[in-house]
Image (cartoon, rainbow, N blue to C red; front, side, top):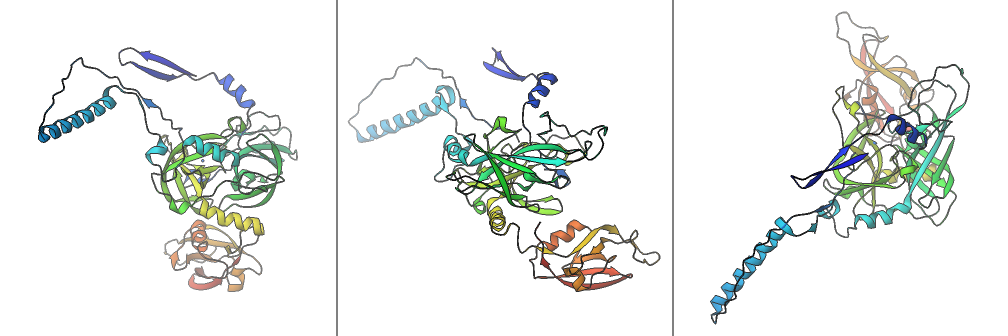
Length: 470
């Protein structure tokens, strides 16, 4: 709880935070629904900020008791001089009032960086909140000792109690189907029931796709939702509910976003008990390259608070338009040190998200995405099955474990145990680097690979084929 202490010397109130007991926290957590999100590895870190508030500034005016006298003059010069002096005194008086005594309302963050046709914070909330939903996903797993939890880390088990990601004792044995349920946020994009959210809200590498998904509207109506499609690489998913007359969000233009613009996030941190929480901040950076699951994502950085359960919610400009989908935050596990990290949240630019959403709605998957048709792993030539000349230095690269039958690589002549050390004329040492280069191409393009086979370098041109639907 918070306690306010009055300081008579400085005429201020000091706020002190007094934590409540652990039992109370645990008891409250048992009553709350949580958010089960997958762990994203971002630049060697887990990546999903502090609330900002504004208030009024109160000054204290000290008045003098001096009296002034009016002087009349027939001279135009004297009159002009007198009026100029009066204006100057009035200006000084206004400045003095602001500095010493008159109460006035401080500008909000939106006012300080507002654009043309900007709305107030209250107007933005009223405009957008009908388009914000809660997404509840139920995952199934069959081993009691399996861990679950993740980046946004608020979830609960079959009994409704809060999960902590700890392992069970395994006494129940394998084969017992159990549920893990988590919550996130979504955005209504059409009046007839289409919504978008993050892929990791409804799908996880370890647990697969959610067995059941439901959507809670701002008017507290709840609907079962079907998964139209999802794309793990861009962390975008589309859901559909059987409803009509919904309020679709107004989509903005993320290409016009500038550092210093106001940014507003609306979401459901820590579950639906805090449904529709609004936080305000700035656009802190644009086009940030963040590595997530061997994929480079170009994201919008913001210091608007993004917490557990905000995933899939809107990042909004000061006109009430959606400019991004909140996806991740940087945590204190960024480095081995215990340095505190605050105010580093990231959102998928809406212009990029729209392309994926359109593809998912039309085809159920993202089309035109290239694939090599291999399974591979990072390796040093010293530990690979490739022959190595005596005294030569180890070469890091990507070892081809398996070549997909009939795939792009096999057609081009790539073989198992080849070591890929270059792609498109650039050195390659890891699978992540290979994927980064490959993903800049489209299906049908030709990618030149440099490989080592039998201790010899050779080049193979691979015509990339379209990746199959997930």
